[in-house]
Amino acid sequence: MSKLSIMTELWDYLKVRKKWWLVPIIFFLLLIGVMLIMVEGTAVAPFIYTLF
Image (cartoon, rainbow, N blue to C red):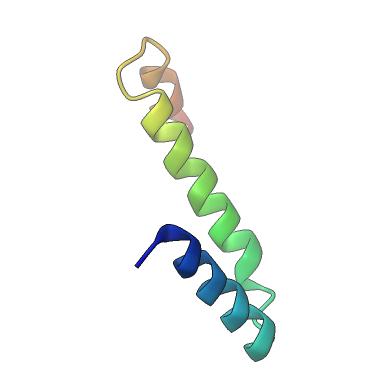
């Protein structure tokens, strides 16, 4: 299963079931995940961890 098909299934689920309130939650979870991956080994990491 490709990543594109997973995103398509998620989009179809949100569209059919009218679960639009899940969109901001998914967006922020992805944003936090990307941010933690990008600053994992840098000197910025201690400052990021103090935010949470």
